[in-house]
Amino acid sequence: MSIIETHQLTKVFPGDVRAVDGIDFEVKAGEVFGFLGPNGAGKTTTIKVLNTLIKPTAGTATVCGYDVVKSPAEVRGCIGYVAQDVGVDEYGTGRENLTLYGHFYRLDGRTIKQRVKELFELVDLTGFEDKMVSTYSGGMRKRLDLAMGLIHRPAVIFLDEPTVGLDPQTRVHIWDYIRDLVKAMGVTIFLTTHYMEEADHLADRIAIIDLGKIMATGTPDELKHSIGGDVVTLSPSTTGEEDREEFMRRTQSALSGKPFVLGTQATDGDLAVYVNKGESAVPSIIRLLSSEGIDIETISMSHPTLDDVFLKYTGRTIRAQEGTRTTYAQIQRKRSRRHQ
Amino acid sequence: MNLLSDIWFQVVRGLRTQFRIKVFIFINLVQPVLWLLFFPQIFKSLADMPGIGGSYLQFLAPGVVVITVLFGSAWSGMGMLHLIDMGILSKMLATPVTRVSIILGGVISSMVVLVMQAVIIFIIAVIMGVDVATGAPGVFLAIFLVILLGLGFAGFSNGLALLFKRAEPLMGTINFVTLPLMLISSIMMPPQLLPGWLDTARQFNPVDYAVVGVRGLVLEGYVWSDLWLSLLILAAWATAGIAFGTFMFRFRAE
Image (cartoon, rainbow over all chains, first blue to last red):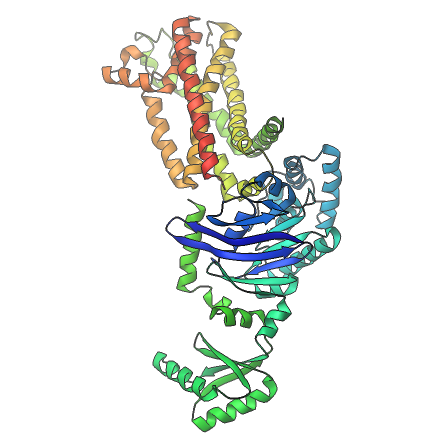
């Protein structure tokens, strides 16, 4: 059974910004579904549409069997939302924050009391119930935030960039809590992230999203296998723009048609070569290139990661985009959208 | 039922927040006392002018109540901005909570604090020697008048917070609006001493209707012709402010 389903879901913001551009996907009950993409890809917009916070421009979406536009109240009752910004109230204690949400979900006082106790245990905050949230660390706030999305035992929980802004150690901890959740409550998780490791670590299935479109869907293994084998990365010894282009052109033509080469993809001055078996391909590539008189600075081989998958489907690496001009513009756009 | 209980929870949350920011409580109480102490000194020579009646403190005290409510309620939108900025608002909106309870709860909780302040100012004023012509019932009516004034300003302020969604334009607008509204009124000067154009302008200022109403109750007694007009205008003002706030909430909250 699909607990989330979208058909041609589209959201256009003023200024013809197509944040989400006709996406179709299904999430099955009980799975962890990851939306992987760079900043500004349309992940948060998708979550906000599914959460009933914004209305889609076109297309449909159902959550728990309810249409997000026609039955928003029913949708809200069956979901929990853990936003990118930690939405906890600093001027309240942990217990006050959690209790308030219990009331919002129309739970009675006794149930709330009991669930507060359970949830503080689950997220390892027992003993901090009556401390002010302003004294909590970033990781503790995120855990409280997580608990606040769970007080009514929702069927689906939306985690928007659950570990963004946390240090690596805390990130791993939050991952543990998320996995415990699935085990303890059997809740369906819809997760967005721009961290490859996070998607790889947590998600049963992943959709790769870029510029508002879904580029590929599958389990992490399926996606990695779709690359076909290993990735050999070549970087040229020249640095000039023209020399690099020359390098790309010559190398690509030298490699094309060779039986051990499945495909090539240029990126940020490097060339990714997809091969069946990296260990035997590396010597062959070196021989071939030196016979063609093409100089390379470094050669490296890796088993495919989701980063390679992302590169294959979008033509860019997710990391390379951070800090580039496009990403900056996208962040600006995202900001101005928030303030509209 | 859900609406009422949701409003209740929001009011409790709002009050908790306001009371935990201790410096605000301090400022909000000390400031009106300073007004009551200093202004009668500054304007001492005005005491015998027509319309003041011998004691500037007596004349000013109703004005201080109105000013406190005016400034307090005009800044009420900052609470909404806090909810927006911290991501609390969108988190609340993803729950089945009654939408309108979020803005009404915010407005009501700022009014609760302002009523407390108004009562305290009245008490201090009486201790300093102000004589309230209508006694305790008059004070209740006066507080009702300033509640209406405050509801209007709080409604507009919350609406503007939702419209701008950032602090700078909101703070700018509040400063731009509140100070002139205070000056274009009979808070500091009796109407008789105002230049003609100001005396006309103040009739379009809701703040002035609150001052005239409250001052009447303190200095003269129940002047029903003035009181009804004040009640009517301020009720309309409160309705307009709340309507603006809820309208903005409906369209701008996400």
